[in-house]
Image 1 (cartoon, one colour):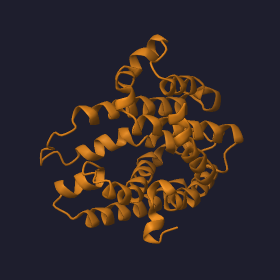
Image 2 (tube, one colour):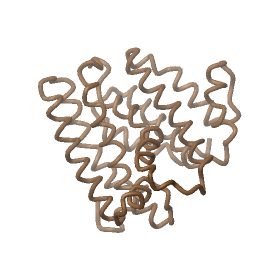
Image 3 (tube, helix red, strand yellow):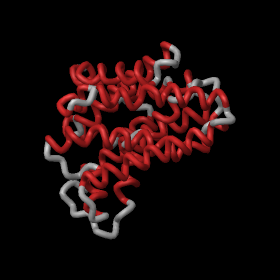
Image 4 (cartoon, one colour):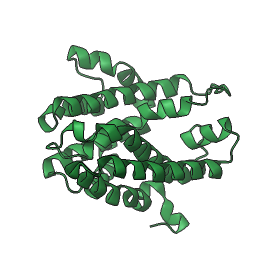
Length: 249
């Protein structure tokens, strides 16, 4: 459980910052969900076989070869306690897709991305970013998915790109060249800073579209605006992203 202890504080921070208006029980769910998924993201080699075969074992009701994966399976089994069937399915699909994205990234590591595969980085990011889950977490369980589902494509852009923008600095320091910003910059013959600007513009446009889509759906709109007020500041202030080194707090 040392791996979870290392990452759980990030889950607590994002839960309290971006989803502060949710119930205590749901914030705990989001905190554990975040901490556990970060364990997978940061420790693939430690549990590669378990991640590769996670879906198979989950479907069969079998236990997994690591505590982290067993805890994820147990947490996912509780999802329907908090959410209606559609929201539950969105979270479950996002979680399984995330596992598969980790495997795909491992499988294709070191391969040259064809110059014509311009949509591939965004395709994979929709899986690896868990954006469907975190978009679902925005809305209180009393809000029907019918009230917010039309905004989902915009919400996924916001969730993924804000993370990509704010994590770029620490990834550059680590010499990472396979993140979404770097891949799209190469594919589109842009500098990385130009690609960051594209992402920033996309986030602003997605926020405006989301606000317009939800403006006549009071409960969904209110939840979204509360989320927006905390999500970006969380990323700017998080020690994980090291932005304080740039004077950003």
